[in-house]
Image 1 (cartoon, rainbow, N blue to C red):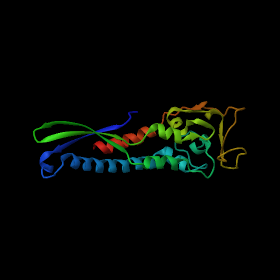
Image 2 (cartoon, helix red, strand yellow):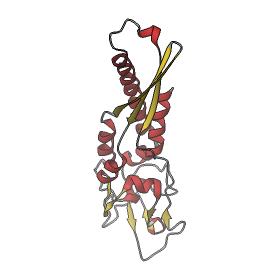
Image 3 (cartoon, rainbow, N blue to C red):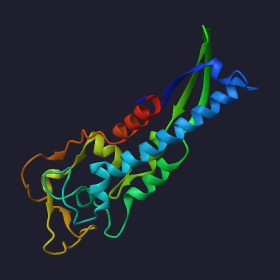
Image 4 (cartoon, one colour):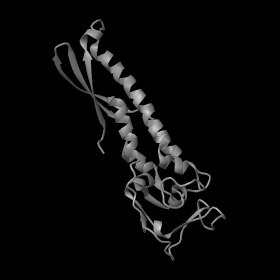
Length: 201
């Protein structure tokens, strides 16, 4: 993914001719647009199936997996809210950096801005897998997590030695299906795309 998004503001100079500072006026417009796009991005995070399945806890109905749910499969401890830290990181104000100013064309001028909605490395560092530090569950959602072939899930009783109480890795037996959860789910990517869509519309 790119380090940041870009937005080009084309301003009709006639609209701001009476302003003392053209750039300050454009900065204000960009700030408002980024604020609105940030709100849309947070809504996209809240509405994503991955977020909903994990927030549903150990007994959540499946939306992503073919059996069980992500909360139990990843091995979060019952009663925890793993998405809350991620939400807090996404709530931080996006970074906005001024770029170049384009040439004046007739009665308009282009202003380039670089916008970073969130820092991936920071998110990956703050979202470790419960059973393997150094690896991120957010990254695993997108790239894959091993052990799905040995994953059992039940809501009829609490599983012994299970963090979630409903899911467990049983290495001595193969349940069937894929050996690993292959990921491929557009999670952070989808959230970023919503930010960019809102920013440029």
